[in-house]
Length: 378
Image (cartoon, rainbow, N blue to C red):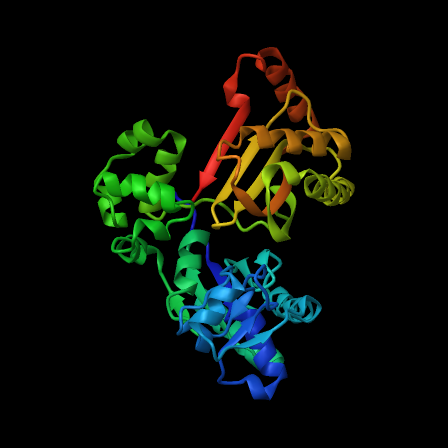
């Protein structure tokens, strides 16, 4: 006998930072608001729906947002205020369930298979949460209801803003079929292009390939693609999600060549190492094994270079040395200029597991090129 399906919500605040600004300053209501510092090096943190009509989006360079929407009102971000509102929203979630997995300040998964309130359905719970958010914060949230996390996340975007969309278990396959494959989690631009070369544009197209064929083409990720195409996602809502990466990054005041990034890399390594030490205090024994260097060129091309050495970095200096060394794996012309650099730690594992893996790496490091990984996302 199969277990009853989970009841999962994905709740997403609508244009969160911009909506907080419009709530707190009545003069901004109904106007295109861009939450960002002005300047050539700044990026958009959030945009109100009035600004989005002009094509303004989060993570866009602020200067481009200004060109798209000259009448936009630019407001510098106030993260302390946003965090305070986020805590209010989390308290509302906690009245209904303890199974809350925050993704950011403005969104979270909730498992409401069993709730504290005894409401008759997941839909009723989602509506009660949205009503409480509106009443107590004077903001709106959209929600998706589904039997698993990834379908709930897609559903929450269906009727934005201030919407609720429900996908029942028997509706999952039909709901997913017409969607572009890019809507599936983990399918980025590179994978989308590879699938397009196979004639795959929609989830329905993806189903035409069997799981075995997808696995032959794409390895384990191919098997996962097959599962996602049929709406299969067994990942539970995890209230204490383990940290996957700790990183710090910064944008230069002026674009610089690669050879002039060392001081910034070493400074960021210090910030990342401090964050790693805090993580070790919370979760002793979880060791980061992989060092990541991130670079963004002056034309906004993003590159990452990573290394999993035989022994995990044991100090800030080791982290900085490895990160600086990863620049040698950047094969762009020497005259290329860079606007941003970042340093991260990833590949977390329990200490015993990390040591065992380190022994394996040490045995084959000299000849095993797989110890190094390069990625580019243009």
